[in-house]
Amino acid sequence: MTTKPAPLERDWSRGARSFSHPSPVLFSPHRGDPEAPEVILCHGMGESPERARDRWPQLCSLPVHLIAPAGPFPHEVRRDDTLRIGHAWYLYDGSRDLFKESLDRAAAWLRAAVLETEETAGLHPSARALVGHSQGAYFGFVAALGNQDLFSHLAAVAGRLEEEFVAAALAHGGSLETLIVHGREDRAVSAEAAHRSAGALKAAGYPVTVRLLPGGHGIRPDRDETVTAWLRRAWGL
Image (tube, rainbow, N blue to C red; front, side, top):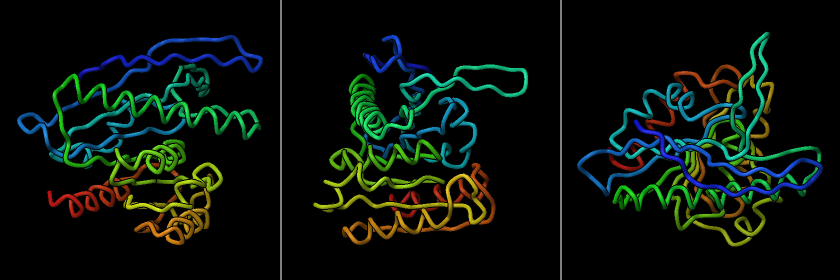
């Protein structure tokens, strides 16, 4: 795997100093088949492309192109006596406006990063799936529903659909196939939120599958197996 920088210009003036720097993209092509399907893997809050890849071994073993981008916003992660800078897909300070604006900017950046990566590598994927966990799933709903010409499939794991942020997509409907995977004992995002998300999509005419699994919020082997099996069936792999 190689790390490819993708440019992102960011200028946030809401009481914080402006900043601008590239967000890395971890890229692994399926060699020999430029038309193989493609998985775009979106990590959770404060995570990194490398951590995301390592937590989805079955998914990353599929015969597909893999793009694992870093969320475009730096996120400080403190654990015990350690400190590291991870990545996030949106900014939230209690303001819905900032939440929505940062989600939209990240979705626009992701689209550009995916297309640039494909053009550079000479890829023409037959289909694309966004797989997001936690914050990556929150973001994934917005990015995939807002770019249905790009994404044919979405797997949202331990996240929730913010209906007001995708009102146009829900009003007009579409063909995005969605898998919602959630832990029954998830204390960060309730399992009921998964049912509400599925209900909103179904009401708008989207094909949705829901899988409730034992356990809480984290990525476990059964989540990896469930998403991988779903894509295998969808793409005939």
